[in-house]
Length: 295
Ligand code: EPU
Image (cartoon, rainbow, N blue to C red; front, side):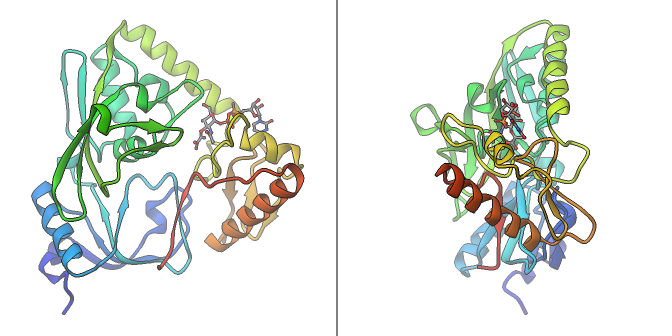
């Protein structure tokens, strides 16, 4: 009998995680749970907390590499529709963290509200986008996100706004494990204008990134004032392959995968890139993707 048996309706054991990630790599989760609503999530989280079961929160799986040995403890995903509701009130849009970022963008565009369209083409959920301040050269989610509701490791609900909510490059001040909802302050604009801006962002992305391949987006954060992709390219590493993992020919900060690729191939390629860039340019590259392991 396991401590999580009370949740047998929503519990799966040894659940393969690879299909739930964009890299499609890695081992299983010891426990995998998809709570049906906030009250159930609270119970699951409290049970994990009381019993010392580590929690991993899975969003859209687009910025994540799961190691081949899998993940110990509970992987929790807010995939139920109750976590993806949205509403529009004037220029304010509230979106559940489980919704895809693309859904949040289309809700806003349809309402004639501008601000989120700069994030066009970024995969993943609203929760993941808020936590990591998703964005790119055209803008980031921090510019419009005004308030965030989150759940602590004990199951308490907190709302962060004003001084309690800040963002940095690919980071946020949110320390709670679960983001439940984000509120965005947008501005009224002509839907056609918004759509045309969105298209431009999307065309730019398609022209420079290997979107047709299996990848987790950019692997490394850009070092201050530099581009990780440009450094890796200048080091002559495009096309370098280890096992089934290869540095994209199109954009050097992307690792694309081939049939039979293992997480370990990607991790070895990451180590190789890091050591070459440190040797050649004296720059330490930090990972942008999350890596999940058994510990
Ligand atoms: N470049 C190269 N070779 C390459 C890749 C890039 O020379 O292989 C050069 C480009 O020519 C350009 C410069 O490096 O002069 C910057 O490249 P790019 O415009 O593609 O931007 P980036 O800094 O590499 C960032 C984000 C992307 C985001 C794009 C566009 C990071 C780590 N990356 O890339 O975000 O899509 O801007 O807005 O911040 C992601 O985070 O997963 C991601 C893909």
